[in-house]
Length: 230
Ligand code: LAC
Image (cartoon, rainbow, N blue to C red):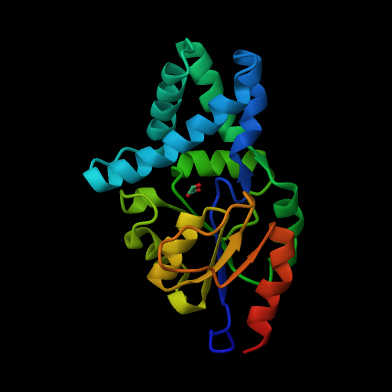
């Protein structure tokens, strides 16, 4: 849409967009042979569900605690006995999630913009996962929902981006693989770029992404072009 203002900053979701939360499946498989993939899926699903439920309940707990609670539930629901030491190993591995190869290739091409992370993760989780992936210097701002004590897709979370970057929300792109994150950011008034990694349709939440592509590399030209048509 030619009426969109030129982009002045790019804000990325972390888990699922830059980092592959399913890269932990190999370790799950080692600990629980034959169950790694299913356990990882259930774990991620419950993790997100707990963020939404706790936000609605107004009983915030940080993403590290939520992630561990979701792991306990996923193991219990799968009939798996997860010892405290297995839990500690898996939680530690959450700090070394693999970045998507397309993210590693795309980010250097976008350095003309201020780049930020806006994530449910705690500052400690985000610092560690970025450091371990060699991305600590890539982002000028790493913004955690902990600053407002509520999870995405609360508008209070998205409001952190314009406040911290000093850029109007209409000139910020939110880039996420999570359709519900795209919906939250679009509802708040940001431009939205959806990394359609799952191949599933957009959630039916009354908003659509401005642009979408299968991976971050395919979005690079769109992001650069959006700026240049000012
Ligand atoms: C995040 C979750 C949504 O990084 O993956 O905020």
